[in-house]
Amino acid sequence: MTQRNTKRASRAVLGVVVAATMSLSACAAIPGSGAVQPGLTDINQAEQALQFSAFGPSAGATQEELVRGFITAARSPIDDYSVAREYLTPEYADQWDPYFGVLVWEGSRPFRPDGDAAGMLLLSVVAEVDPEGRLLLTEAGESTELRFEFTREGDEWRISSAPAGVILDRATFDAIWSQHQVNFLGAGGRLVPDTRWFLSRAALSTEIVNALLAGPSERFELVARSGFPEGTSLTKNAVTVEDGLARVDIKGEGLNNPNAQEEMLLQLQTSLQTVSGVNRVELLIDGTPVKRKPQAVAPMTPSQVGAKLAGMQNGKFGVFTASGIEPVIGISPVVEELDGDAIALSRSKTVAAVRTAAGVHIVSQGFTAVIDGRKGLLAPSVDDDLWTWSLSAAEPTKMHVASASGAQHDIVIPWLDGLDVRAVGIAPGGAMIGALIDDGGKSYVLVGGILRENEGGMPTAVTPKADIELWASGEALDFDWIDQNRFVAVTKQGTAGKVTVGGPGTFPSEQGSVPDAEEIFGGGNRTQIRVLTTNGELFAPQGASGWQRVASDVEVIAKRG
Image 1: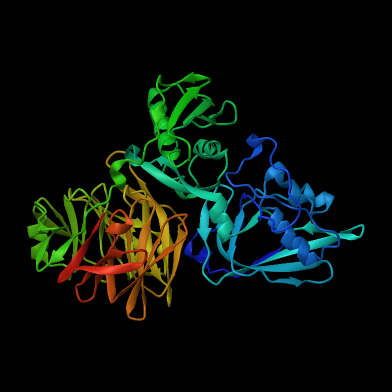
Image 2: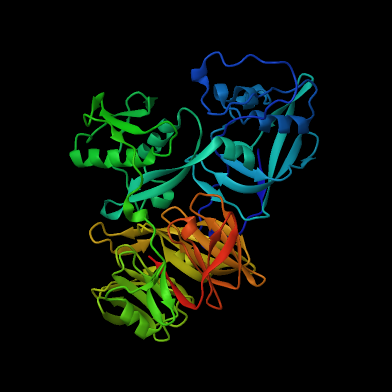
């Protein structure tokens, strides 16, 4: 029996979903020696954009050489991983499942024997990808032991038991896998991006469409839906792409509904936009086009558009412009009078939430009211449906939501129970909530989904589980969303604040440090990220990981959404 002994953080206690192992993979290393080999005789068989050769076991290979050769060969999926299966006994070659998942590692791969007919391979794992293509990060420093068993086949050793799935180093994974947004439909018809990873090959369009047909992943199954009716399938089991046109021919029940057709086209247009070589999409039902003219692939809806930084400077509240502070009509005078220490402004600039010593206030059209008077309140948020969100660090499982109309209620967040929550934020579009957690010298970001009423967008609950989508060293300071797919966190290291960009299903990217950092603003893209220091200096990105001061005497920056 194959065993995997893994050092894990207690994620189950946090209610965090973690994929058990690995996922579909791709190619092998470029040979550095040997005779020239003939090229592909049929270019249509080249499923990957980048193809490498795979080689079978050499005569007299040791157990360790078999394991390392098997892992290398298993990077090439040609002919159902036929070369990798040469390393296995005939019986196990039929049982091994390379499509179970992907394990992504960095660093060295020490191997040690475990008796006469087994061995353990130790890996520093950085991420796991499940069969649906969802990537989950692992905590830095975690290690995983993979067990391999061996049997003699004549005079040669062969592997008789190995982990299911494929093992890829980070560089290879980045080269042959790519990240895409599979878009589903949330409350009010808003698009909800579900980040997936796919092998970069000719079948990419087909795999993305099949993901749409299968519906949202576990994270979003309560939050979003697919416009494709249940039971819908591809007529010819493939999406054809020719001269930039992706032709999606489907069959099933309920496909002649005009509203469903519009939803399906929207999902196809936005989900296929990042596929190289695709610039138009045509939806067909049993061979008949839904529209006469193919539709251009399109970006996400404007709910992703960034928002300009707002805040308090020299006692004045408004949006920062090149000429100074631009007041927000109906909002700025009240916010200035409240003189709070944490502010959130809706992206529409019609509702604000302000934290003062008395609690969190909602501000709209020139009036204000206290909506949450608990102690230990974190900085509030205002979502795109104009609901304010406030949370007490002393009571992290009870989120209070309120609207300017006077409606208020609490939402239970079970996966924050017992955690040291430092910041929370609602993603643009309102489908996800993120929370920055301090864990004694290290930090992480939990992301869960938000359930809403279809009309009006009232939040009713969050998903019962969340995923850890970022690990960072240092004490947790602040967190904000950049757009629907990315967020930014700042953590304390010494006297500086380290800035890290991450997102659901993505690898983190460190963006340098800012001395005495205290708060962070996401903005909408990397160039709009801003960091506020304890002495009121505002910093903007400069170059790959540098920062430059762009303002001073800033008292508070306002989160936008």
